[in-house]
Length: 394
Image (cartoon, rainbow, N blue to C red; front, side):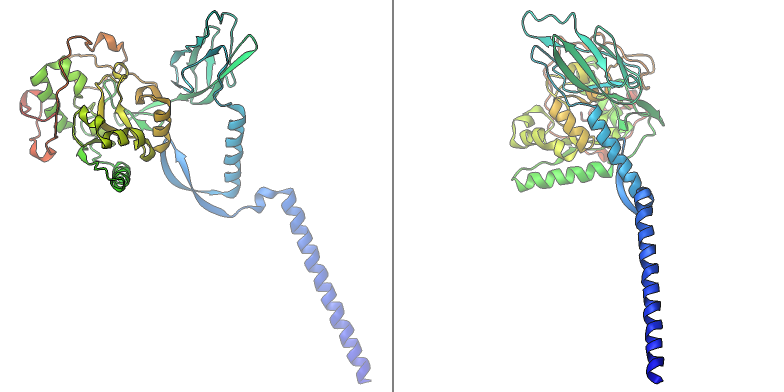
């Protein structure tokens, strides 16, 4: 009797275990089917990533599904925007074209001898971003990237195009998030950020790596206030005249040093370019996010004489593109640098004109050699050019 009871109990136990196993299997099967039908909901775990935003970065929490969307979008862009591709009989010296919204730029092509481009066909793969007419005149329409294609005699040329957007915020001008300070675009007197942390950190890294190679790169001049620049510019005008000063110094409010992104390295004259430090800086500063702001041979574009010692922080990606393509910041952002002397000089310019009309190119005296910049604390702030000390450093 006891044996029969034990057998019944065992059968009941095994039956219960089989029932529970069946429930688990059914539940697991349901989860698998649900994941296949809606894979995005299955990946709801959030993670923190760094998302680039207009050459600056911010920490932003996004879902894994958002990451997949970003990746797929980037892949689609790579598929729809071909890499630069030259043709055999005609070519462009620009491997990438940078253009601002509502700006025009003529596509300039070179050809082998006797090759006729009159039958060339011009196209843009995204007409929402830019347009191009039958003469090769390109017009920026909205911010974004696209590719222009030139076809002639069964040959094809592809050139990537980036259309940028200019914005003004608190009296400062930004192009795709990059602050621009030159003869055309200035900053208000109240803009006083000091040396920015990203500039300082990048320069410290550059300096440390140079030191490991036995090179001594140091800061001669960094951040300058609006008031300090009054003294600098007045000193240059008094010594050499306003036209000359315009080539070698910036008006108050238009100096790169006021941006907080600029460092003058070592000796403030172009003998620096001949030193090991100067040569290394020119070849490597882009790896740290800096550019040689006023390169040799580009004076008609930047509006300033060559300065081998003057570097500007723009971020590693932008600096590398500028370096590899041999551009100035003006070319990269599609802006001009023009000083038009008007009453109340020092206000932000609101128009762009021809540089050759405003900057003399003849009878320029020899570039002065400046070996040091006096520290700003030794300069007494002034309220106007008339009050500036005559011995202010350049």
